[in-house]
Length: 158
Image 1: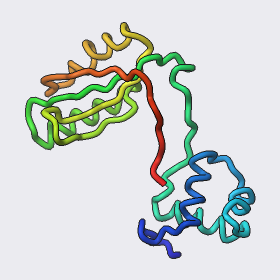
Image 2 (image 1 turned 90 degrees about the vertical axis):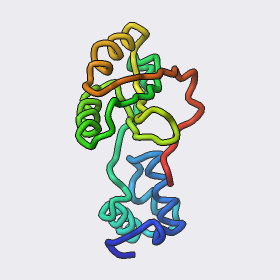
Image 3 (image 1 turned 135 degrees about the vertical axis):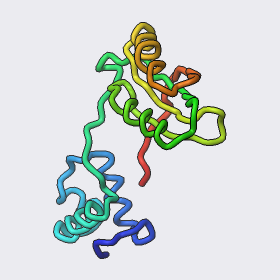
Image 4 (image 1 turned 120 degrees about the vertical axis):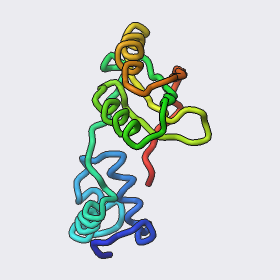
C-alpha cells in the first residue's frame, strides 16, 4: 500500500482494522494486530496509511444522548426560499453553530432542500430551537418535522 490509498486498494485486513477501530478506537495496536493476524509493525503501518489517505478521519467518543438529557431526536426537512450558492452557504454556516444539530444534509427527491437531525431535551427545547433559531435563519421558508420513535441501529461504513 502507498500513501495514496483509495477505496479500491482497501483489502480485507484494512476493513477488519477499520471495523475494530470503529468498535473500540482505544484498542491497542498489539490487540488489533493479533485480531487481524499481523505483527504490530505492519499493523501500525496500515493504520498510519489509512490516516494519511484520509480514510480514518479521527478518533471520537460516542455518547448516549439520553443520558446527557437529550430525550428527543427530531428530523427536520428545511426548504429554502432561493436556490443560490450564497443562500445555501449562509444557511450551512448558521446551522453548524447550533449544538443541537447532529447532522445536516442537502437532499434530493423531496420538495425540501435540507434534512437535519436535531437532539433536544424535550418539546419546550424543540419549540425554542424551531421558533427562535431555525425559523429565524434568513432564507428558511418551510420546515417539516418528524420525531424519531426509536433508532433501530446506527453504524459507520466499513
